Image (cartoon, rainbow, N blue to C red; front, side, top):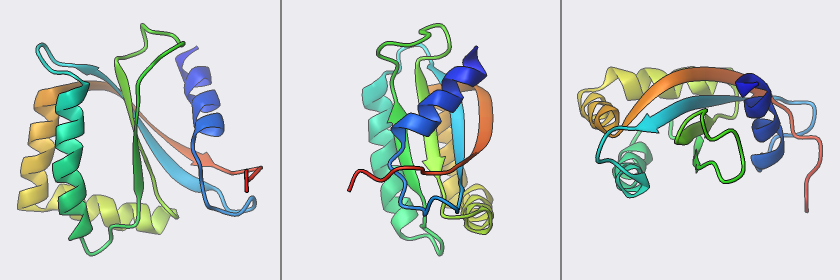
Length: 131
């Protein structure tokens, strides 16, 4: 059920710019807030993440926080979602983010805010553009 929900959310909620014949990789982390932590803490973390990401050699990705509103509320408190233009770009960004001292410290701080129990990678293909 959780995987079906993630598939539907991924397909319906992300505003991709990729052409219909070019699926893009989307990473989805299913997380719960650690005791005393809230959405505001995660948003503050993203402020620092975005500043750091702007200085990366490959900052070509988009990120979302999905908070359940009308869903399987037992799945997790929050979904942390990142999309990339292609798998090569994803690999470059991940190697840079998880391989650096400053980025490693930022990720360690992330782990004090949320406990992520699931991580999926989806290839998402946009089939309709609202423009």
